[in-house]
Length: 410
Ligand code: LLP
Image (cartoon, rainbow, N blue to C red; front, top):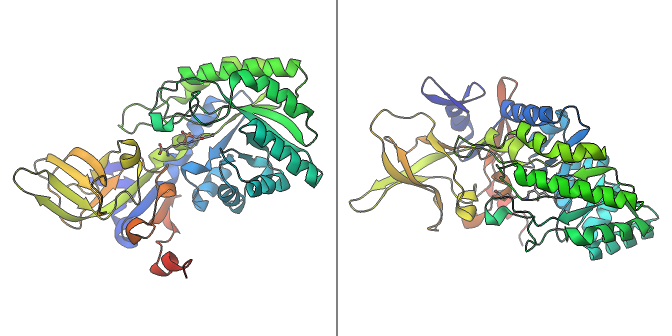
């Protein structure tokens, strides 16, 4: 997403042309940005056997998944629905790792029947349930143990997962014993160990410490006869929502590979945000503006927390720009959505020049945890999605219709 001749473009295509054609709100994704992010991250691990399992929770629109699959990604699914999305996008079961706290019996049974690459086990009880399912089916299920290393990833509390008081995984000190138990269960094939510290991590040092903890655990349990094949370091690499500081893939690789290399185990990482966040913008139209003495100047968009809830849920900052800025003095303003909620503010205390009803504004870096977290609150319909790639653009998901919206009701 860059400005050219005073207007925002996506891979050379004017955003204005796209949004006028599709209507707003619309998510626009840059295929070029996804390819570039993939090349940077994959390139950083060149020279060590690895696979990038794209975390579908960040964006599971089928066309985006197909693009990533074409680049060589495998998949990290967090629910039966995400496994289904991965399959529909063409991933093989052997390319899917299945993570998630609270997997249901049906989800586990489905994953065992499919023969996914690994089910990432969250607890002793889950290990026993998968063992029983696999034995009933007369198969051995490939599993990895998710470890909670109690390491602070220095990110927002809502998206930290690797601390002891977080609900995820098995505390490190119980992991070796549980892996030995798993290895003795007839229905389970322990192929890996897994960790995910949290998300939007910019300081790679904690990721290095987690890699060391897992490498040490791998060495210990392999010596006890547990035949591991991979170490899965989860996702978490942060992007530059402020336009300034992102995690550096080279620094990430340099932080984790010294620990992983001596194990010789295949390395899995599960990036979500890093691959898709900067590639996406949410484009809305100005529905109203108002400024009265003693109150802020409001820019009211036709898009808000129903399309992008990150600012409201995590106090996340997203840059917001006018697609075709008008000349004139800038002033402070609140960029808000149309919902009947005070928290429906996309941008607090921003600066904009003159803005008129009908103008287009783009919320940047919205390609991850944007559409996937959308809701129909206020009976709003899911927006359209567009992919710009190969010099052209196309609608990859049409806007929901009212018929779609009511299709499941009595
Ligand atoms: N692997 C596991 C097991 C995860 O739980 C996650 C994210 C990922 C991989 C991908 O993490 P990433 O590379 O995208 O940081 N909705 C929040 C983010 C929640 C992330 C949850 N887990 C947000 O909008 O910031």
